[in-house]
Amino acid sequence: MTNWTTTPIDARILRGALEVERTARGVLARLQPAIETADQADI
Image (cartoon, rainbow, N blue to C red; front, side, top):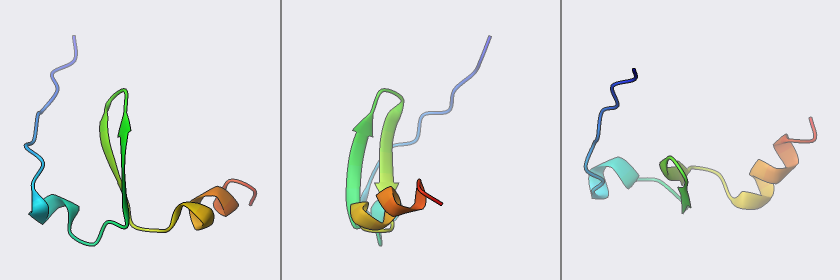
């Protein structure tokens, strides 16, 4: 059994994020533009 920790999301956690994406597991704060993230998958 997995015990998950739930952390409330507020401005302090998202500071510096350029984009916020909702996923099935929660929220993903991206610090890079999406175009750069897509380019990294090709490396």
